[in-house]
Length: 378
Image (cartoon, rainbow, N blue to C red; front, side, top):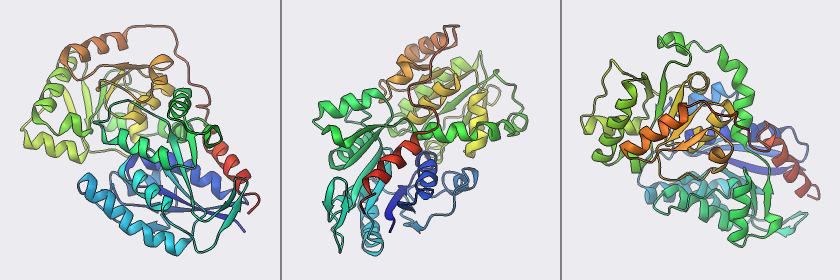
């Protein structure tokens, strides 16, 4: 009998992380993955299209939660996920990243008691194992909702799969037992490396009349950057100074577009190309061909590191320090001077940067190996 693992995704970054995990688990004779889509991101351009681009089958279970405040959305995911636990009777619930879906499903699973106990190499269990992929990341800024989600999920996780050495040290400092911590690498990079060749064929540069290496790419979506009109206005103004030297392409998240409209912020179309959100392959092509990327996304910091593309992070901190120490990332903060200084530093020639250890496209295989060993007694 195979151990049933509910694999949870809800927001755009989750899909790139969960795809290689579901494939690896599905190939194991010991494991049966079941994909749960919470619907935290429900726009076609932010969710369903990714299943096609990543070669994923449709989710087995869709919660269709939709948007809401942090409290309302988290509570609604838990309310809809609990009956799924009762119906599916999983042996494990695997969550990725740091969005509301991550914490909500982890918390529901941690409190759920199966109808029958089961056995693992760790001993007998009545509750499903809570498995967190991308554990241990810390920016040490508790004003970020994602930081709260990370800490809480790790505190109730039974198995914590970590992307980089700093994450292991963070968990150790927090008193997590060694047997719960597994350094496996980065599943988002599994997807990137598997998709690079296909992305090369994307026509997006021709469609947008762009030349390789002759533009910058911008992404903005974090509430701390886009929800306050003055903060957003200052960021766009600083980036507009860059645009005087290097045209900028801005695929706009629906949340950010609404905030731009509310604040009547309209970047100059002579210097900016404002486009709708792109599918994964088109965005990968656009990112890999950029001269520099400006972002407040954690995943893009990692992807640009592997692609060797300079990155300026529009935040005062990062939970992914290896992207700075070994990769191509530069912290720009949110001030004009900081952003422009980081841009100048990012585009200067420098020594080749390295790819972090275990970011080799095989992280999902390592996760599968740990889980298969754990459930081999089942």
